[in-house]
Length: 209
Image (cartoon, rainbow, N blue to C red; front, side):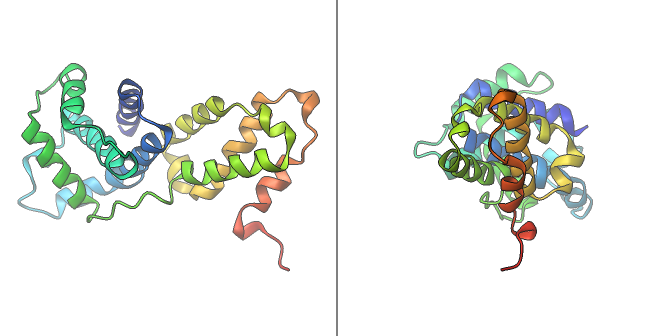
């Protein structure tokens, strides 16, 4: 059941035209943390909020929008106004109509499920962006690496629950960069040892001094 809501979130970020950091921080908040904790939180609270009793498809779509809103508040100098999210919800959530007050209430519930821990510094995009900049600095072929293709691969990673949850964000970031290199850089330009370089960027794979 996770995939439709991840796809809904990705599509919503495209409709809202947010930056990559907002998009992937939202995916990290929703797919990696909120969604896996939701059932346990609802079962452990006899007086859970109406948005969790029961957990409907429309409610999860609302929470996906909330994750984008929170991420925008963290990363954008001018965060998305709630009216933009409500307008998108009115056009894309078919099962139920949510008011502005519902959005505000859903934000509180979302934060409660996360125990108000909304740090996003450990998501895969943050590590990927760091590696991407480093790679372009050490290899001329880095200019040939297609950033949009990298983002497409990252979308696919988040759509695969077993991939995004079972591997560290650093490992995913390095894997995405290597895969993008192989896919987008012409084979005759494969002059840089990207696999050993990518492995070296992972702390647990670095040789002892």
